[in-house]
Amino acid sequence: MHCSRLETCAIALTAVLLLTSASGCTASKTTPPQGIQQSSQLNSTSLLENGPMQSLSQTGTPKLLDGKESTLRTNKALSLADLHHKYKSTFLFSGPTSKRQVSLTFDDVPDLIYTPQILDILHNYGVRATFFVVGNRAAAHPEIIRRMVRDGHAIGSHTFTHPNCNKVSDTKFQNEITRTEQTLANITGYKPTLFRPPYGNVTEQQILWLASQQYHIINWNVDSLDWKGLNADQVSANILGHVRPGSVILQHAGGGEGEDLTGTVQALPHIIENLHTQGIDMVTIPELFHISAGK
Ligand SMILES: [Zn+2]
Image (cartoon, rainbow, N blue to C red):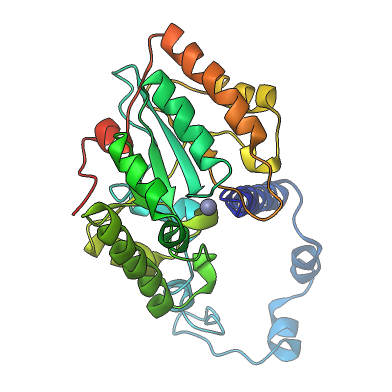
């Protein structure tokens, strides 16, 4: 259950597309494509006689074969980066930089191996965090969810079965959310307003529906990359090397099959002590953004 593997791929893909697009623009400015050079050698008569059949506008300019640009561009799916920009108020990445506060967030909980160890460490240091819960795991281990609430942590939804939301129908997606709401409401007494999509993937329709249901989509701007099975030093470096006031830090406290989060557990005391030394407080997501945790 790697939250960020596909997210990383999606961002990388976007970057590749942007780079490809950018390099294409540069090439067209400096070296005209061969086809254009060849065409320029032909006179207009031969173009009309030998070229494909094209209808002409009143000014003599050939019409675009498949219609105006807006016809085909309108329904093109937006990239993840486009969606983040378009729905700024629904996506939350980082809090205000004016306060020395950050949020520790942990995905894919609860499990019986790593989640209790993470909770023990947070309890020992008196630190509160935010947990993104997989609904069917909460149903399997409700006592761990009750402990999170008792210890003062915030709880958000991470779907019921942890699907790649880009691949599920809107009906199935809404069912993932409402089943998790009901499961958590039965355990905690309230429905969550925080949602983190598995792998970071979510469609525009799903964003609109989540917003209509009073959800905030909680992303992050510091990624521990702990799902790669990194050791404690690597997890610490990934977090402490990038953290700044307002950061939302992504970690995992529930393992997928064959996943080893020992590095996350072993790094946590050092991370907490280091942040304390820097005078940085760890608060929950609702505290960082001044939003409600439940509805
Ligand atoms: Zn996840």
